[in-house]
Amino acid sequence: MAVNFKLFTLLSLFTIGSLAQSLLTVLRQEGFTEFAAFLEQPEGQNVLRSNRSLIVYAPTNAGFLRSRKSATVLTREIDNRTAAIEYQMGVDSGGDILIKRHEPVCSTVGGPGAEDLMTLLDEPEFVNLPLGQNASIVQKNMPKGVLPVVHSGLGDVVKVTGLDIPYDHGLIRPVSGLFTLPRLLSITLPFLGADKTLSALRRTGLIKDLDARTGITFLAPDDRSIPSDVSENMLAEILRRHVIVGLPVFTSDLKHGDTYKTLAGTTVTVTVQCADVFIGGARILAGDAIIKNGVVHTVDKVRYQLRQKPTPMLKFLSSWMHPSFSPQHK
Ligand SMILES: *[C@@H]1O[C@H](CO)[C@@H](O)[C@H](O)[C@H]1NC(C)=O
Ligand SMILES: *[C@@H]1O[C@H](CO)[C@@H](O)[C@H](O)[C@H]1NC(C)=O
Ligand SMILES: *[C@@H]1O[C@H](CO)[C@@H](O)[C@H](O)[C@H]1NC(C)=O
Image (cartoon, rainbow, N blue to C red):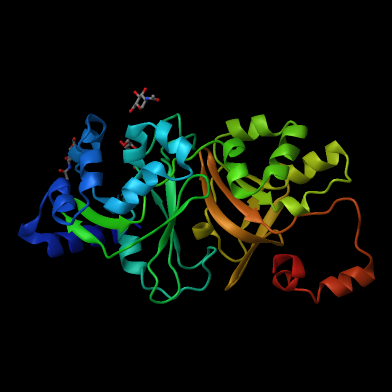
């Protein structure tokens, strides 16, 4: 990554050369006037004065205005402006993205073709990660001819809408809207259609701990797969097996055969089958909803049904059924 970063810096120096212009000047020239005005507020001065190489995710005028009004919405209106500005600024791994952009896409869920990128956002109100880590976004390549998309808080996804534009300290990358700031797990789950999972976490008393921990990955089972016929202790044990502790694991990190420790003390193994990514046997349906202390991936089933052991006949049958063929996912 360090080598790529140097390469990126060199490349930018070459491309920009003596034409280097400030961020605000280029934003205005290229028509990002709403976002330029947003950056010019006192809260934007930090970013404007920064001498680091940045990828500035700049919403188009239409995208900016839509973001201020749209549905995830309510939270955006009350968001800290400083935080909102800092979250649009990707740092340091620009070289990787620049160079890997045209890699073949295998999965749009994660694995190959996805990149996580740290931003300047480190406000304790929105970030509770291991030391030195700021909030991330995850950029994913799309099949041929379609520009990448970027995942942020509350499961929001914005589209990259055009090619990078250089300025004197980095690149401006046009996007379809502002990113949504990361929130607590308990606030995020309802946005992911995981209300039952949230109430299970409440019933078992786990949610407080999960909201407070530093650095987690939560594998949120599809609401339909939360068992209703198990004891509370059993449910708590099942849910603890859905929490990877110690660090956020973005889909861009997932490599076939990797293993991670769960809150229950068990291990989960990653399986990547081109179009599908599995963790501990559960398929990721939607990845990379960024939360204050990590990331959430929704998965298609509860890992480890503890109660019933499948009969040999059931085992034999289910070995023929690939998860994506099961009718409930149609
Ligand atoms: C960036 O600014 C810091 C202090 O604000 C300074 O120490 C550093 O040398 C600067 N880096 C470059 C490349 O100008
Ligand atoms: C917004 O962030 C700044 C730090 O950059 C902080 O001083 C301020 O209290 C925050 N405002 C709100 C309303 O949270
Ligand atoms: C995190 O954000 C802060 C505030 O903008 C910045 O000073 C710091 O360098 C960032 N950390 C990293 C690792 O980029």
